[in-house]
Figure 1 (cartoon, helix red, strand yellow):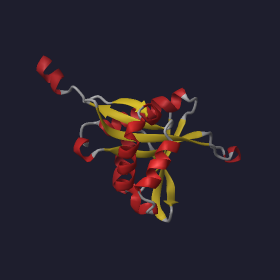
Figure 2 (tube, rainbow, N blue to C red):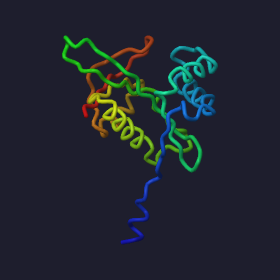
Figure 3 (tube, rainbow, N blue to C red):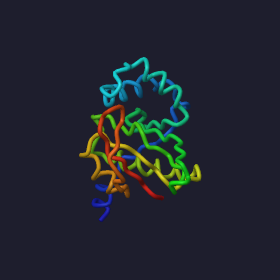
Length: 162
């Protein structure tokens, strides 16, 4: 049984906000530009400034002393007359290509849920540009709400109720 238990041991990320490790701003900007740069074509320098501006809301996932993942949680307040409570918008979900398949995506969602709860909010919203990721988010408790658009690119809008 011990061998079986050891085989199931997960690779564990530790998270810190980017404002606590500003030396990773260029890497976070590079990841964002490589993954989503086609949306706005603003370049890495633009992304670096954006990451600095959002540094208290961007989380860096560290594995074996190296940054390998990130995500951001941005405050979103909706018109309360439509019955939607304040939320955290999950953005910039990224795992370095060399570290995919190790369970880090789930750890990102779990951390986002934890932070959202600590902030006193019970709703996470997100857009996916890649419908192939929807199943992953649904497995983490997300529900597809509607179709959306991000700078003229079609998205799926999802919500996670906590």
